[in-house]
Image 1 (cartoon, rainbow, N blue to C red):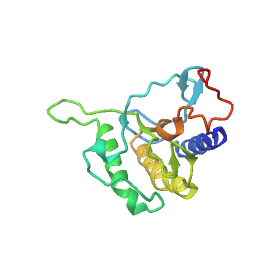
Image 2 (tube, helix red, strand yellow; image 1 turned 30 degrees about the vertical axis):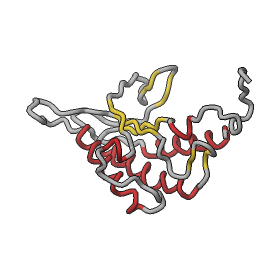
Image 3 (cartoon, rainbow, N blue to C red; image 1 turned 90 degrees about the horizontal axis):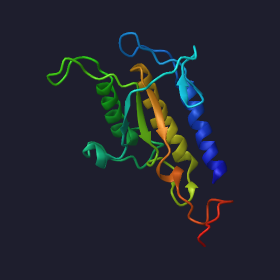
Image 4 (cartoon, rainbow, N blue to C red; image 1 turned 45 degrees about the vertical axis):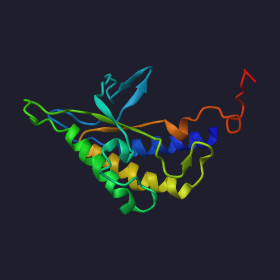
Length: 180
Protein backbone atom coordinates (compact mmCIF):
# COMPACT_ATOMS: atom_id res chain seq x y z
CA UNK A 1 0.00 0.00 0.00
CA UNK A 2 2.76 2.41 0.96
CA UNK A 3 4.67 1.63 -2.27
CA UNK A 4 1.52 2.20 -4.36
CA UNK A 5 0.81 5.46 -2.55
CA UNK A 6 4.39 6.63 -3.16
CA UNK A 7 4.10 5.73 -6.86
CA UNK A 8 0.91 7.80 -7.08
CA UNK A 9 2.51 10.87 -5.51
CA UNK A 10 5.65 10.50 -7.61
CA UNK A 11 3.51 10.40 -10.76
CA UNK A 12 1.41 13.36 -9.59
CA UNK A 13 4.47 15.46 -8.75
CA UNK A 14 6.21 14.65 -12.04
CA UNK A 15 3.04 15.55 -13.92
CA UNK A 16 2.64 18.81 -12.00
CA UNK A 17 6.30 19.74 -12.46
CA UNK A 18 6.16 19.02 -16.18
CA UNK A 19 3.11 21.26 -16.57
CA UNK A 20 4.39 24.22 -14.57
CA UNK A 21 5.10 26.90 -17.15
CA UNK A 22 5.26 30.67 -17.03
CA UNK A 23 2.06 32.17 -18.42
CA UNK A 24 0.15 35.37 -17.85
CA UNK A 25 -2.64 35.18 -15.30
CA UNK A 26 -3.73 38.69 -14.46
CA UNK A 27 -1.77 41.93 -14.65
CA UNK A 28 1.84 41.34 -13.52
CA UNK A 29 1.26 37.71 -12.49
CA UNK A 30 2.85 34.49 -13.74
CA UNK A 31 3.01 30.88 -12.61
CA UNK A 32 6.72 30.26 -12.05
CA UNK A 33 8.07 26.94 -10.90
CA UNK A 34 7.77 26.65 -7.14
CA UNK A 35 9.73 24.70 -4.56
CA UNK A 36 9.33 24.03 -0.85
CA UNK A 37 11.71 25.57 1.65
CA UNK A 38 10.81 24.61 5.20
CA UNK A 39 7.12 25.39 5.49
CA UNK A 40 7.08 27.92 2.63
CA UNK A 41 6.46 27.77 -1.10
CA UNK A 42 9.08 29.81 -2.92
CA UNK A 43 9.59 30.91 -6.50
CA UNK A 44 12.81 30.49 -8.49
CA UNK A 45 14.34 33.58 -6.83
CA UNK A 46 13.61 32.13 -3.34
CA UNK A 47 10.84 34.65 -2.59
CA UNK A 48 7.98 33.22 -0.53
CA UNK A 49 4.74 32.86 -2.46
CA UNK A 50 1.20 33.09 -1.10
CA UNK A 51 -1.44 31.36 -3.20
CA UNK A 52 -5.12 32.35 -3.16
CA UNK A 53 -7.62 29.79 -4.31
CA UNK A 54 -10.51 27.50 -3.70
CA UNK A 55 -11.44 23.86 -3.23
CA UNK A 56 -13.31 22.32 -6.15
CA UNK A 57 -15.31 19.16 -5.46
CA UNK A 58 -15.31 16.74 -8.38
CA UNK A 59 -18.57 14.85 -7.78
CA UNK A 60 -21.52 16.11 -9.82
CA UNK A 61 -23.68 16.05 -6.69
CA UNK A 62 -21.67 18.97 -5.25
CA UNK A 63 -21.79 20.89 -8.53
CA UNK A 64 -25.54 20.97 -9.02
CA UNK A 65 -25.68 17.77 -11.10
CA UNK A 66 -24.45 19.68 -14.16
CA UNK A 67 -22.60 16.65 -15.60
CA UNK A 68 -22.45 12.89 -15.20
CA UNK A 69 -19.69 11.56 -12.96
CA UNK A 70 -17.12 9.76 -15.13
CA UNK A 71 -17.34 5.97 -15.05
CA UNK A 72 -14.64 5.28 -17.66
CA UNK A 73 -11.61 7.55 -17.27
CA UNK A 74 -9.99 6.05 -20.38
CA UNK A 75 -12.73 7.57 -22.56
CA UNK A 76 -12.21 11.35 -23.02
CA UNK A 77 -15.87 11.88 -23.97
CA UNK A 78 -16.93 10.28 -20.66
CA UNK A 79 -14.73 12.78 -18.75
CA UNK A 80 -15.56 15.82 -20.92
CA UNK A 81 -18.66 17.02 -19.02
CA UNK A 82 -16.86 17.20 -15.69
CA UNK A 83 -13.65 18.57 -17.22
CA UNK A 84 -15.49 21.34 -19.08
CA UNK A 85 -17.45 22.34 -15.98
CA UNK A 86 -14.29 22.51 -13.84
CA UNK A 87 -12.49 24.50 -16.57
CA UNK A 88 -15.40 26.98 -16.70
CA UNK A 89 -15.32 27.35 -12.91
CA UNK A 90 -11.55 27.99 -12.98
CA UNK A 91 -11.96 30.56 -15.76
CA UNK A 92 -14.55 32.42 -13.69
CA UNK A 93 -12.48 32.21 -10.49
CA UNK A 94 -9.43 33.69 -12.23
CA UNK A 95 -11.27 36.48 -14.07
CA UNK A 96 -10.42 39.87 -12.58
CA UNK A 97 -13.02 41.85 -14.54
CA UNK A 98 -15.97 43.37 -12.62
CA UNK A 99 -18.85 40.96 -12.03
CA UNK A 100 -22.21 40.85 -10.30
CA UNK A 101 -22.33 44.56 -9.52
CA UNK A 102 -18.87 44.61 -7.95
CA UNK A 103 -15.93 46.71 -9.17
CA UNK A 104 -13.71 43.62 -9.29
CA UNK A 105 -13.65 39.93 -10.13
CA UNK A 106 -11.48 37.19 -8.66
CA UNK A 107 -7.79 36.41 -8.83
CA UNK A 108 -7.43 32.84 -7.68
CA UNK A 109 -3.96 31.41 -8.18
CA UNK A 110 -4.73 27.76 -7.37
CA UNK A 111 -7.51 25.23 -7.26
CA UNK A 112 -7.50 22.28 -4.86
CA UNK A 113 -9.08 19.11 -6.18
CA UNK A 114 -9.79 16.24 -3.81
CA UNK A 115 -8.61 12.85 -5.00
CA UNK A 116 -11.64 10.93 -3.75
CA UNK A 117 -12.91 10.27 -7.29
CA UNK A 118 -9.74 8.86 -8.79
CA UNK A 119 -10.28 6.34 -11.53
CA UNK A 120 -8.90 2.90 -10.74
CA UNK A 121 -8.69 3.33 -6.93
CA UNK A 122 -10.81 1.94 -4.12
CA UNK A 123 -10.60 2.73 -0.43
CA UNK A 124 -10.38 -0.98 0.31
CA UNK A 125 -7.68 -2.06 -2.14
CA UNK A 126 -5.81 1.02 -3.40
CA UNK A 127 -4.87 0.77 -7.09
CA UNK A 128 -7.14 -1.82 -8.69
CA UNK A 129 -7.11 -0.72 -12.33
CA UNK A 130 -4.00 0.96 -13.69
CA UNK A 131 -5.61 1.75 -17.06
CA UNK A 132 -8.36 3.75 -15.28
CA UNK A 133 -5.73 5.53 -13.18
CA UNK A 134 -3.69 6.34 -16.30
CA UNK A 135 -6.90 7.55 -17.97
CA UNK A 136 -7.55 9.82 -14.98
CA UNK A 137 -4.08 11.32 -15.39
CA UNK A 138 -4.28 11.61 -19.19
CA UNK A 139 -7.90 12.68 -19.61
CA UNK A 140 -8.42 14.77 -16.49
CA UNK A 141 -5.25 15.83 -14.61
CA UNK A 142 -3.15 16.82 -17.64
CA UNK A 143 -5.83 18.77 -19.56
CA UNK A 144 -7.11 20.45 -16.39
CA UNK A 145 -3.58 21.45 -15.32
CA UNK A 146 -2.89 22.76 -18.82
CA UNK A 147 -6.05 24.88 -18.72
CA UNK A 148 -5.17 26.19 -15.27
CA UNK A 149 -1.70 27.16 -16.46
CA UNK A 150 -3.28 29.33 -19.19
CA UNK A 151 -5.17 31.12 -16.40
CA UNK A 152 -2.07 31.58 -14.21
CA UNK A 153 -3.26 28.96 -11.73
CA UNK A 154 -1.70 25.94 -10.04
CA UNK A 155 -3.39 22.57 -9.50
CA UNK A 156 -3.17 21.12 -6.00
CA UNK A 157 -4.17 17.47 -5.62
CA UNK A 158 -5.42 16.86 -2.10
CA UNK A 159 -5.05 13.32 -0.77
CA UNK A 160 -8.48 12.42 0.52
CA UNK A 161 -10.65 9.41 -0.03
CA UNK A 162 -8.92 6.23 -1.22
CA UNK A 163 -5.38 7.60 -0.94
CA UNK A 164 -5.83 8.59 2.71
CA UNK A 165 -7.56 5.46 3.99
CA UNK A 166 -7.37 4.86 7.74
CA UNK A 167 -5.84 1.65 9.05
CA UNK A 168 -8.37 -1.09 8.40
CA UNK A 169 -6.13 -3.84 9.73
CA UNK A 170 -5.32 -5.47 6.41
CA UNK A 171 -3.64 -3.04 4.02
CA UNK A 172 -1.31 -0.93 6.14
CA UNK A 173 1.68 -3.16 6.79
CA UNK A 174 3.67 -2.20 9.84
CA UNK A 175 0.83 -0.28 11.48
CA UNK A 176 -0.54 -1.83 14.62
CA UNK A 177 -3.63 -1.04 16.63
CA UNK A 178 -2.66 -0.40 20.24
CA UNK A 179 -6.26 -0.96 21.36
CA UNK A 180 -6.40 -4.55 20.08
